[in-house]
Image (cartoon, rainbow, N blue to C red; front, side):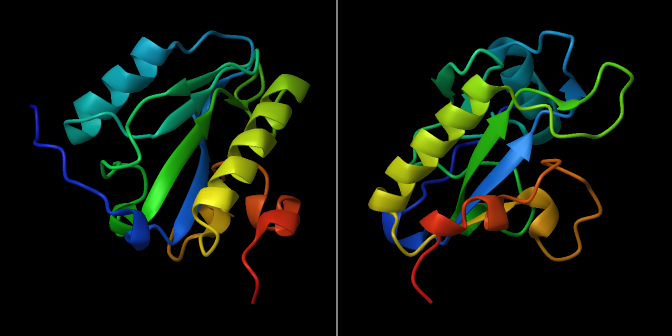
Length: 149
């Protein structure tokens, strides 16, 4: 199933939503796997960026295209996913490596400059989401990058 990609306007971006891939930290989850998972579930890649365990930041969707990462919020958000979120036994924990933390912070700093009114949150912080994704709380961890109240 291939669906037509929907445009996303810069001024519509109100949220920067952080996700984890919900994969075990001792296993590789490639960019191809991430894209294939999104295409299988939603007919398109889900996220705008993917951060690998080594800190490599991989652009997936352009910022001008609507993602498929947060039901009901894709029309007003950009999606960022980091590889991991589960420990080797499959428990939900913050598995971000120092390289991922640094890459995520740098990306969010840039996005904060580009979208100064957009709030940074985790998928789990959206209303009616019963997931632990992304296994930490971005709204508080990145409080220094939140828009002025």
